[in-house]
Image (cartoon, rainbow, N blue to C red; front, side, top):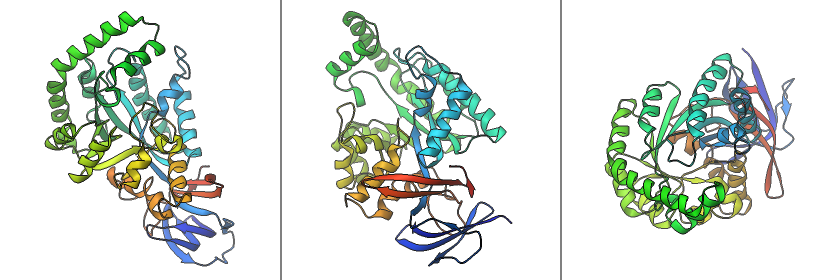
Length: 379
C-alpha cells in the first residue's frame, strides 16, 4: 500500500479550516488528523492551505490551444497536452472539456476541433499520459445545421458526462445586443458590414426554422444517458420556463439578473463564469457575476476560457470577505463535482479521491505549490 502524509497544513474541509495532517493511501484520503505528524517522510506543507482539486464543468481552453492565432491550427495532440498542463497548473484536477457541436457560420474551425478533440482525448487518456482527469461536455449549438450529425457521433461516448444547449444566434442570449454583435463580427472577420448583415438575416431565418425541432431531437437523442443538462446564456424568465419544461436543471452563465433569479427561484442550479469575477465584469457586456454571488444566485464557477480564473475567483471572494474560505472553495470543488454527479471528489474527507491542491496566499492571489491527482503528485 503506497502512503503519503501531508503535515503542517491548513486543511479546508466542507465546514472548516483544520490545522493538521492528511494521510493518503492508494489514491484515497484515509485520515484527517489535527496537529502535526511525526511520521518519517511526511511532507511539510509549511502552513499552506490544502484544498480539494478543482472541478471545471466548462472549459473552452482546448480551442485556444488548437487555434493560438487565427488560421494557425496547432497539432491536436500537442494542443491537448498543453491544455492539460495548464489545467494542472491552475489546480484543476477534473476537467470537463466543453467541445462545441455545430457552427453558425462564423466559427468554421470548430467542427474539426470537436472531432480531433474527441479522438485525441481517447488516445491520450487510454495511454495514461494526461495529468488531469478529463471528460467531455457536449456544447450543442441548437440552430446549427451540422449539430445533429456531430451529436449523433458521440451520443453514446463513455467519456461524455454533461451536455448543454446553446444558441449563439444574433439577438438572443449573450448576443442579444445586435449593434454590438454586428460590430464584433466585422471586427473578428474580414466581412463587410453588408456581408455581416446578410449573414445575420440568414441566421435569424434558420433559428426560426430549426431551433425547436433540433432542440427536441437533441433532448430525445441523449435521453437514455440521463446526463446533467444545462442551458447556456439564459437571458429571460421565459427562457428559464422553457428549460424547466424540458427537464433542464442547470443554468450556465445566465446573462441577466432576471434569468438568474428565475432559475434559482425555480430550483435550478446556476454556474457563473470565473473570468467574470476576476475581471470585475463580463467581457461581452452582460451581468456582473459578483453581483449574482452577493445575491446568493451562484452555485458554482466554471473557467469558461481561462483555467486559472477558477481558483483566483474563489480565493478573491474569500480574501475580500465576501464568503468564508470553505464556502468560496466549494464553488470550484464540491458544488461542481455534485453537479457532474461525481460523488467521489470535490471534498477533503476520508474515502474520497485524493485530488488535492496546496496553495499559499500572496496578497489577494493564490500561489499554487503542489497538485495531486488520485494521490499522485503531478504538479
